[in-house]
Length: 345
Image 1 (tube, rainbow, N blue to C red):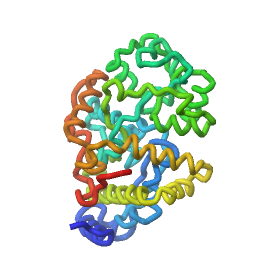
Image 2 (cartoon, rainbow, N blue to C red):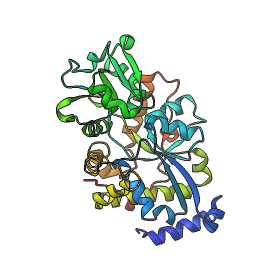
Image 3 (tube, helix red, strand yellow):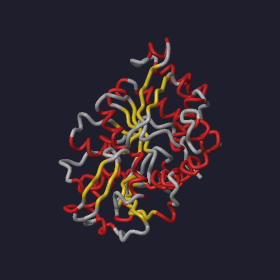
Image 4 (tube, rainbow, N blue to C red):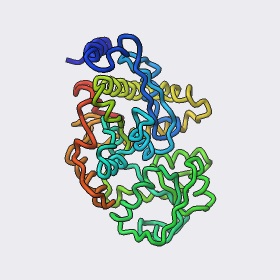
C-alpha cells in the first residue's frame, strides 16, 4: 500500500521513537549538514524543492546545504566528518572503500546512473580521440570527478600519460581557460561544461568536442547520496526519511520544471534561469535516465552493472582490494518500491 506524506510521517515518527534521534524528533528537528557536488545550479533543484515544500521538516530533518567544490571532494568531506551527507561521485567512494574501508561512507541513493565524465577540447583542435591527449596540457579543478578518474581512463583507453601535464585551477575558470587556449583540454561532466560554456558566450555544440570516458568502455555510475556510517547505523529512519524527501523533490521537479528553477534562483538570484532549466533537463536525460530505472527505480542501481563498475575502477586504478558492493551501496534506505521513480522524461 502506498503511503501518503502524513502516513509516512506518522510511521517515521513512530520508528524514530526507538532510535537515538527520538529526543530530536520529539522536541525538534535533527540538523543534517549536506555538501553538494557543485555550486547552486539547475540539477540541485530537487533538494531545494524538498526543503521549500517541507518534506525534510515532515521527517524531522533540518537540512543545511552548502555549495560544493567537486563531486570527488564531497566523498572525502563526509568521510572526514565535516558533513553528515554528501552528493558526490561514487567512484571516489569505491576507491576509498578499497583503500580505507573503515573510513568510507555509504551510498544510499544512486542518482546519476550514466557516466558523464569527459575531457572537453576545442572543436578546432587536432584532438579527436583519447590517444590524441598524449603530450597535451590539460586542466581542471583538483576535486573534479573526471580528473580524479583520469588515471583509470588512461589505463582503459591506452593513453601514455608520461607527457601529459595537468594544470589545476578553480572550477569557475574552466571554460575561460579552454576558450583562450591556456589549456588544450578540460576535465568535467559533459553537461557542466556544455552549459557553463554557453554562459561564457561559447556555442558548445559548435565550439567544443567531448572525449567521453564512456566511449572507451568506462560504463560507470557517478553522483549519489552518500552518508556517514555513523548516521546510517545510529539513525537509519532519519536516512530513510531524507531519501523519501529527496525522492519527493525529484517528483515535484519533473512535474514543474519552472518551479524547480525558481527554487534554485531563490538561493542564487544571479543564475540564468533559461540556461539552468536546459541544464536540468539535460542532466535528467543524459546522466540519470539509464534504461535500468524502468525496472529498478531511480536510486537503486542494477546489481550486476554496479559490480562491473566497481571492477573497472579497481582494475584501472590498481587498487589494493575489490570492495563488495555492500561496502559501497545499500538499498536499505530507499523509498518503498511503489514510491520510486521509474520514468524521468
